[in-house]
Length: 316
Image 1 (tube, rainbow, N blue to C red):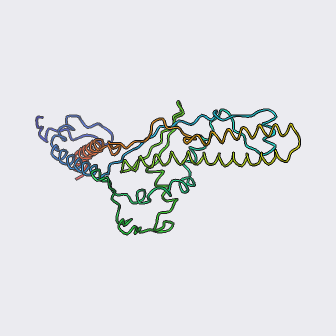
Image 2 (cartoon, helix red, strand yellow):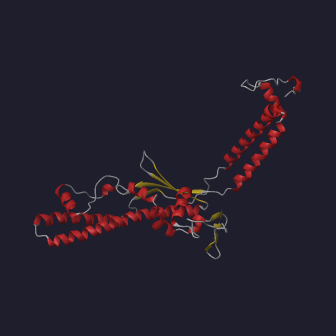
Image 3 (spheres, rainbow, N blue to C red):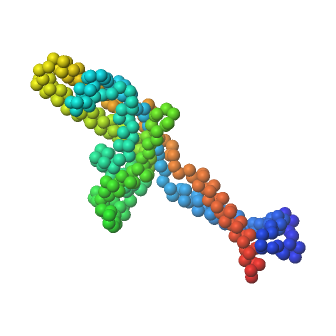
């Protein structure tokens, strides 16, 4: 670009809103090119260092399908009415069964505290620092947890505790590691676990699937066993043949349901695509981070050059 003598520049612009001529803008930017290049390069280097400092995050994903509850038998008419009067809960055909409730259960503190937390190593959740891909070993933040002595040493203040509580752990788990998404078109569920170790991510994904299936399987089994016990008792005490026949039919249905419960391990969610140990990390996107830092550095340096030329120098 040909240099324009300063005396030939149109510096008599109106600060009240008149545009600065484009040739003058280009001239000022050309004069400050080394400042722009230097600042942009410096900020870009910060972006590179920052992106390299961020740990790799691996995402293990499982695709789940709600188990069709129509496999259960339904009763109607007088038998269903009798069951209602007797206080016996009958299996229903169709509907969504436990799957809808299970999604809410997965996001509940009580389920996490009673079913998930006891089976995970707490430092993997609350004190993880890095994962060594060569040795498949985890390193922990020594300011939080001492691995050699298996002791929590973190500084804390109320309401926190020395050892992270279930509520604090649940918040970290749901905000940083766990996600479940329901696909509206297909009804399938995407269960995702993020962690610095791809092996931990897969392990936790499998744990959640097994626990939620076992939770509702045991819950329905206990209800059916209670109903079977109650119906057997009523059959032995009643003298009316019609009532005995209806109760026997109810009993038959619950025995069938118990058979289904015993046979199905994947009781609420069927695994369409199981979780896996991922080879490639999902986060961070280091290329994007470097590009954003470079753009920020360029905008910052250009703004600085223009501000100095048209505002600061004029004020002086």
